[in-house]
Length: 384
Image 1: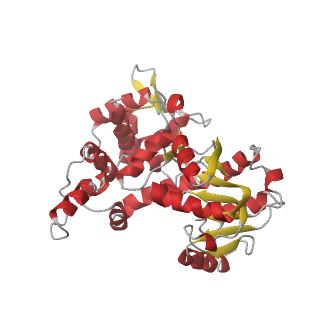
Image 2: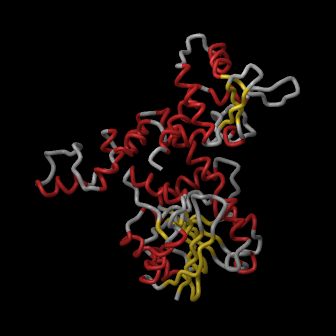
Image 3: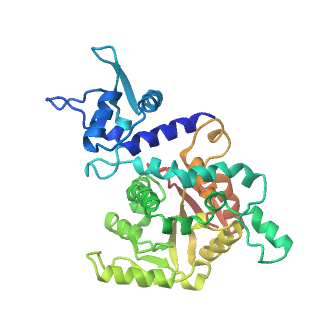
C-alpha cells in the first residue's frame, strides 16, 4: 500500500517521454504487435527527436515496475534480452490525440500525478493534523481568525501558493490535463445514468410516463434532453439553474444545432422553493456534493416543498459505501473524494450520510443504484 505511488510516477514517466506510444505503434508486417527492448524504444524516441535524452537505466527499471501493474508485459527475445509488449491496459494510457477512435486515459495520470496535486498530497498529513499553513495574510482579521483560517487552508493551496482555480488559470498545460479528465468522465455519465434508470423499478419508462421532471443545477439541459430523447412518454421536463447559467444556455442553444424547446430552461435557486416548478421527480447531478450539510439540508427542504406527494429526489453523485461494503475493499469513488478534499471542495457522501440528511428533510432513502461510471450513482429518496 505504501509503495503504490512508485508505480504512479513510473507510469507518468513512461507517458511523458512517449514510451507507451512507441510500443503501441510496434507491429510486424502482418500488423501483429511485437515487443521492443529498452534500447529499441530509446532509438525510436531519438529518431523522432534527435535532442531527446533518456536515462536508460532509469527507464529499464521503470519498465520492469510497470510489468508488475499490468501496463506492459516482459518478453525474453531470441537474443535473451528483456523486451516489452503493451497490454490492453497500457493501450488506454497512450497520449491523447494519437488515435481518435481509441479512448485515452493518459490524462488521468498526467493530471493526478503531476506536481500540483502530487505536492498537495504531501501536505495532507499537516492538514489532517490541523497544523498551520505558511499561506496566511497577517494583515487580515485578529489573531484568532487568522489562526482558524490558517489551519483550514486546503492542501493544494499550501503546496502551490494559490488556489486550484488560480493555478489552473495560470498553467495552461496542467489545465488541459484537468479538463480532459472532466470531459472523459462526463462523456460517460449520461449514458450510464440512462442505462441504470432503464433497469430500475422506480426510474424506468413506465414510472416516468406523464411525470414532471426538474433537473436542479442542470446547466444547459443535457440530462433532461437525454431523458426526453430516450423516454418519449415522460411529461414536462425542466432544467433549473442560476439566472446567469440559464442566460448562457439560451444563448448557446440559439447559436448552435442544439435541439430547442425540448427542456424548458428555468432560472431559479435551489434554496428557494418558489422558483422550482411543482414536479414529481427532482434530479440533481454533481451539485449537492459541493455544499455543506447545512446548505444541503436547506436545499432538500426546498425540494420537499416542490415535490408532489410520494415524489422522488434522485441525487446523482458518487455515493460512498459503508460498513462491510467499505472495509478492506479499494473503492475509486472513496479515493476521488480525498482528491476533492485536496483542493478544498466539499466531498461525496455515503449512503448513511444521505439517509440521515434525507430523514431530517422529510425523505426516506429508498435505494442507491450503481452505474457503469464510477463518478456517479443514483441515490433515490422518497418524499414522506
